[in-house]
Image 1 (spheres, rainbow, N blue to C red):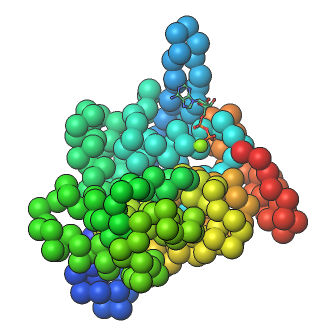
Image 2 (tube, rainbow, N blue to C red):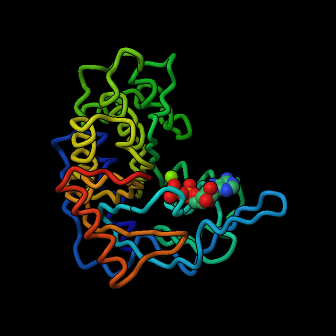
Image 3 (spheres, rainbow, N blue to C red):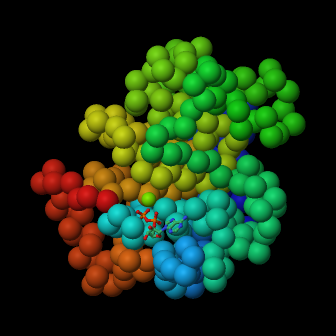
Length: 277
Ligand code: ADP
Ligand code: MG
């Protein structure tokens, strides 16, 4: 499908030949969404208790967009993100990503799919403390057929893309929070995924590093044609994304409700008032 054509040529040639070599234009007017969620619900069961974390959510995300899922704490943002990243399966409904239906795959097939198509970024970076920045970034490439030399070379290029070409041999504890998150972004990028997914990537960063992280994620979309999906309650994110979906109590807000939520976030951003979540 179109999304595939857009996603694949981006980083492999870039990782093979260097950053300047390939600046991918984002194809416009692609009729095929990269992500399609159809009437999805996710119910968690704890003993006799049921939590309906997502309640009949449908949405589409075109390829090559920077998208935010916003909403208060517990509104289902991470649950939704986990479904489209192939980390979890819905109770009912369909999840399609890059032409593949994920909700029918078993655990193993889902893990294999994830390794090839998704780059994950977390709030607390999740770097391995005993590995250098370069070895952390090269880690996802262990699941490929690339030899060690090539793995390290691609890791170096990914680190250069995030502005850390001078920190290859540093260990996570010797890097600042902002630098650690950039290593994590390089690790998400190194396999040239269709989709980069980030759960509260600015949640543990100060204002300056939060903005730098948002700018970098935007850069992945603009210069590499990546689809970047971010869970956030950071109102600053609105200035960087193409599209924001607002969730509340497991439901996607639409129409006037969504417009109101968007306005509230925009107001928080301009007034510097942070909403909890
Ligand atoms: P958000 O990311 O918007 O804060 P989540 O998607 O993490 O929200 O959670 C949505 C709802 O589902 C919350 O009520 C949460 O407590 C519940 N929930 C999330 N994960 C689990 C789980 N593994 N088991 C039980 N309940 C969960
Ligand atoms: Mg969450």
